[in-house]
Length: 131
Length: 107
View 1: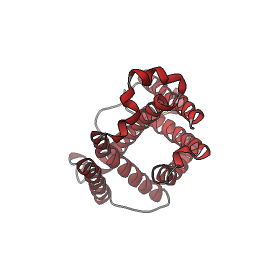
View 2 (view 1 turned 180 degrees about the horizontal axis):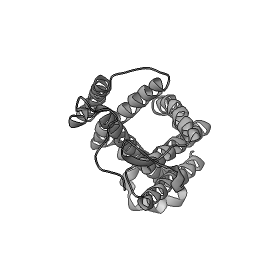
View 3 (view 1 turned 90 degrees about the vertical axis):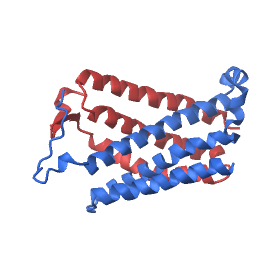
């Protein structure tokens, strides 16, 4: 079992005592990826129940499933999915750019990407409100 | 995943990501952007079998490697890490089975 505390190579400014933005960014990115994978599972399984003839009995048990995406509350999913997709995309693009040598600040990139993700959550919520 | 691949970096134990996984994850991630864009915004795109099959294949590759890395790099014991890798494979298998069934059912 590894140690629980983070050991930074240089900690003369006591950076580890505050928010470690690199670690926080990575953790949020992983959570966003998990949300997206969860959505993909629900999306694929849900559509299979509607279209796959072998699962037709399940659709007969849950006929509401075939038109679920037309319900207003369904748009609430986007309040979570959109920011997850935006964060995961932008953070990953940043990682790729960093692979090619781009130097960026951890703090401002975290807040910029998080801000854009939050804006996309509002956009997703507006879809629910206007429905 | 053998013990020799386990490393401790800055006090955290984990498994190093093989180079091929690292490259495939980045390439599949770059492909996912336009593919998802087309899948969502272009009319009838979800009913184009080759395009949806390509999207499914890219999702499976990207998702599996992502979950594998998530499971392997956590600060876990070797046994728990192994179960996490098995769980990653199970999640991807569910997507694969239902995704292929869905592809075969596209009208």
